[in-house]
Length: 220
Length: 351
Image (cartoon, rainbow over all chains, first blue to last red; front, top):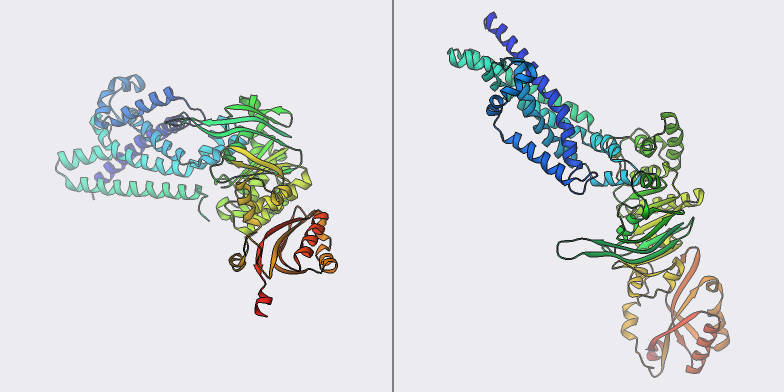
């Protein structure tokens, strides 16, 4: 492998990590609370509120059903407002974050729903406020499962970030398309795929390890 | 301690509202262990959950320790709930917290400092016998140990009432006994009022002072455990009692038993001893004074709330007149005698 190719790969990897890192972090910060709201406002839950639940659910579904490549282009004006430009790696983090948020929200919602209703009831019986139930019962109990969901999110974002090349976002996917496909250099394409496989493998392993460490439901 | 007046609970369903509780009134005294027994679906779980308002009653009043719980909402209700501990059939422990963390949970909710929490949790660990398990997670504990954590957690906020929702139903008989012994110990040591829901009559017999029998959302019978056991008034209660005290006659005897006197036959009697009378030597007196021989066919003595309750079935061998005198004598001693029927005398038949 030529030193130039290694240099290209490292730069692209860095861009991918930047895009995925930022959007995963922001997407989680927005998505997990959104997932909490979706759960606690649900039917029979501690802060049942049908209108809020329906509206949020509809917004989440709408975002989730928009193909990422369309979302990427459709929100270009919004991206310009946020980062000042619609081209480049930083610009690509905006649609990635917007795609990640409802994704995380639905996964977190599923995890939080898994928390045994008996635990919530016990906390209510002990005089816990809704806020205390969220912070001291729902989140700690669902954490291992939420972490597993965040791992899935990161892996999906690695895939999405490949499309960010469409807005000049750079990254591994962009490198593979430009050199491997457009310049007929299949070895670049192959190298990109290998790096992506290793990256996804690493993310999945780390995520599994953290989830396992957090999970106290199985005997140590 | 707990006054329940005219409690009604109706659940809305698709076709028609279902009444889970109908006009339930109970008065539970301070420091007693009060049992509520019923078959599944009788409404007992709904009833106990109304006491801390996990279920809001459709009508009626609930007063706990002088405070009308059923009138409270929001922060005042949360505050009142801290005075009512609860344990559950499936323990409901937080899997992400250690034993210590679970017991500390209600104290954290009440905003206590770390030092205060440590000071209060450690004696509770000793009380329930889990001092060596403080850093274990629930998944590492047995069912009985989990329920002990549940009990310690319920006691942490120093409640005046402990509600037990089928607390031993998921445990094996031996563990059930040890958990019941712990509850009784706590009741005596701390003077805690305990309300216990169960479908198992042995649990009631083991530790309760008084009991209410719930059927289809109504209290059909209530009273001291001894009275309910020795003189059940309804079929449902008799059914529960027979889980503990089997009064069915052996099948061989049932086949020989006739409703009308048999020539050359004997009378079969059931004699029930309750309370202090169980210790009087009435049988010996009858044999000596009336020349009636008593052949014991079946018998047992149960101790309910430390009071003996004896139940024997005898074949009385003697002249009809002597047997009648013997029956009158036993009755005059305030024991219950029931004529079950007549049998041919096995010995005379052979002779």
